[in-house]
Image (cartoon, rainbow, N blue to C red; front, top):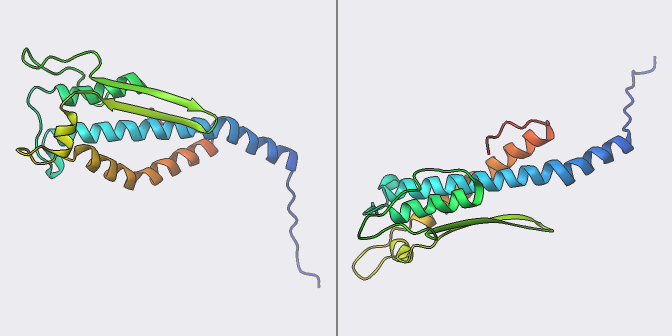
Length: 167
């Protein structure tokens, strides 16, 4: 008796079209969503750590520096992780405190978020009288641990044709 056999065939025209569609439309869209989510999560973590969470030193006086991170996020993505208001009469918030933008090119897109508050480097790296906050460094290290899972989820959703990411 002859053993049963199974035959598979692949329509290469349809497969190539699906791969092309993913590479030209779905993949870049998923990459942009991942980039936006990583930016959002990073800014959220920075602003939370400035409030003294995660064992980092609390660095809030007027809130201008913290608000500048959210201004950058709004400028770059239209999303907000917290308040965009900060400062007081002694240290007023300025329109250019935070900046954000997408840079799109042949190799993809980058999200650039900047905190332009003049004393921002002192908060991050410290001064002779203030220990370093390392809020940005800590946020980037934490987000780096999550980046692969976030990217994987976005690619799987794109392959399945789902658009369930709010970003």
